[in-house]
Image (cartoon, rainbow, N blue to C red; front, side, top):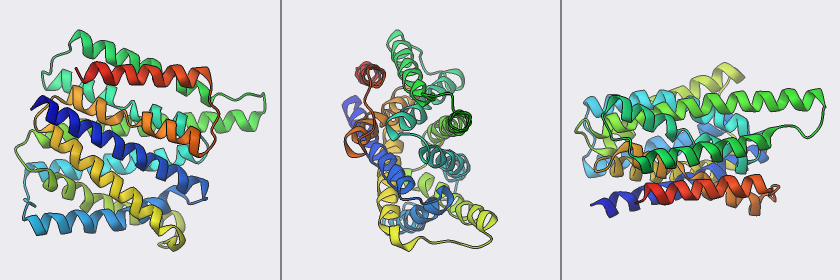
Length: 287
């Protein structure tokens, strides 16, 4: 059983990693964060509802309501994450964003009586070190005031995104242990996320904007997010959040390596050391 939920968490990690890369692709193409979130949610909600109706697995109850709560926190997490990617490298932003699992795990240990073992503490320490090493890459290389302000703004947005994602991970665990099925939680999230995306776009643009040219990116992001979330929630049914969420959120290893090769992002010894710490944390948590 342990091998089963660890494998599911690792597959979830890969899906989330590819979704982060797609978010970066949208930023490089100049798509505003609120516009891109609409592109992916118009695929995510119909897919979740269709799957639930076909398999007759949508049930309104406590897990569904937890999913609705997660829909609110996830929306703001992805919004600020996308904003951060417009000015920062995915090989830096994604690792810091995905280190949100430290908050998720801390909440699970504090409120769900999960065990804080030496291995988990060591893994968390490695993850925090990795995040700080990579966050340092956002510092400006010059004294240009505009660049400095932009860096501070990116850092602020990234911290907000990370906190919201950490809370989302904890809500997922609450939904998973509430006795419901995975698809009910996913649909609860989707029915809240969908209107939030459209409301935010209307407030920003005074109209609903569809960037049809990049619809394929929205489809790719929705597919990866659905796969990552489904596998994460399945794993949480059988294993501790303080192990599964960290492995799933280590997706930044995938996105960081892809970013370096795909976008020719600068590779430094700090990035190498940060990714090494992250991989070490995955190995520890997989034991």
